[in-house]
Image (cartoon, rainbow, N blue to C red; front, side, top):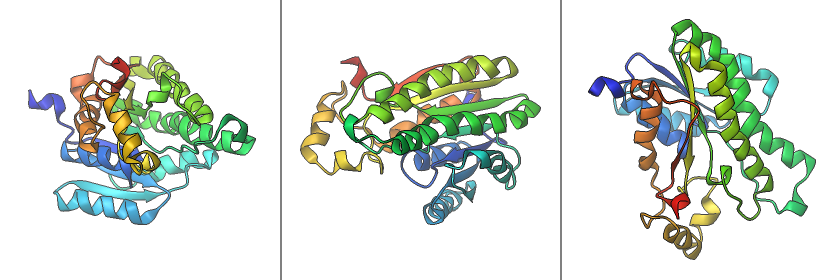
Amino acid sequence: MQELFDLSGRVALVTGGGSGIGRAVAQALAGAGASVVVLGRRPDPLAENVAVITDSGGRAAAAPADLARLGGLPAVAEEAAAPFGPPDILVNAAGVNLREAAEEVTIESWNETLAINLSVPFFLARALVPGMRAKGRGRIINIASLQSARAFPRGVAYGASKGGVAQLTRAMAEAWSAEGITCNAIAPGFFPTDLTAPVFADPERAGHFARQTAIGRNGRLEDLHGTAIFLAAPASDYVTGQVLYVDGGFTAK
């Protein structure tokens, strides 16, 4: 049964791979045997994660890039293929949450949020699909959110983008799954990341969200490891177009 979760010989590209969810997922995929390219704007966190993975016996490389330049994504895809060959796993973990009230949202902040959270996952995936198609297999894993299904304060633009991610996941699955390229999304609950730092900096607020879960605690980044490996591995061959909530039962209550 181990072969169902074996990623040996696979190449994964993880955006936002220097911190938070992207960092954790990159480590999980490398631990399952994949060669991993971590991508992000800041070289130092990427290099640090590469060192963690290689020190643990994995294979990893860094690809610093600014995803906000949508026209440059085909070049980003080419750069990601340089260390280990064309990726057949893409994890779209890069994201931004500006936490603006409805009255504070500007055209610029709206466009920035939707570009990083919604446009990049599609256009980067599309740039990688030819390589996946040539291999006869691909896995695209988007990062959705609790806000894909419900509203939170100061979350107009972010919620719109993450609601879009849920539908984008289904649309990408419809477009490419018949070619062996599946697309699913992970919707995390509250995990300690750069984006949720304001929540975890307030113990009362963090405790409130923990009590909202069925399990009774907020997430730990290692709680995402198994889900990420499952969605990238042969075990999920017949799973596509799905949004899997890893939220401790937050949305169940």
